[in-house]
Amino acid sequence: MQSEQDAQDAILIVDDQLANLKVLLSFLQEHDYRVYMVDSGQRALDILPRIQPDLILLDVMMPKMSGFEVCRRIKANRELAAFPVIFMTALDSVEDKMAGFSAGAVDYITKPFQKVEVLARIHTHITLRKRERELEEALKEIKKMTGILPICSYCKQIRNDEGYWQQVEEYISEHSEALFSHGVCPTCYKKMMKELKQKGGFAAEE
Image (cartoon, rainbow, N blue to C red):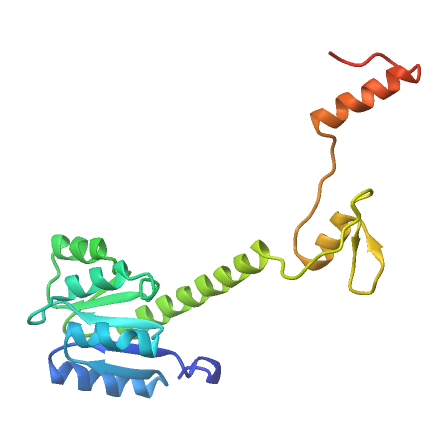
């Protein structure tokens, strides 16, 4: 059984065969997944924005719109593209599998289902998606700094929340995971050498 923390992981099953839906529903609910079911590709596209599942189990062979086409439409939609899709099908040729991956699927499950395999693949791809979301959130935090930072126009120190003035690198280090290595840029190096020469130091490099 899954831990309580993972109990809300949601899966959308898309299959036009009622027997398959029943088998998967019963099995996945036993493992504490929240399950949604639809019997056509169009209904899947309609419901996806509302339910925001952690993973989609998508049948390939369906009337009107195949699973390949459904997957292509999901991946073409910026708001839906991040949902991982696992195809379910009796087709097991290399060509069929390549077609599924080309459409945007992350994995393939062949029918008849092996429950242990289904569970392992679902767990793997939901875990991977969670790691991706964590990374996306971390990158967002790294890329942005909100609010106004008071900075001295002369010495370039930043005034912190307590009202004290800090060096820029010290402030950033305290508010992020960034590390600094110090050096002298070419422009400043030439300026320093020029000043030393004027004060009687060694000659500046040309």
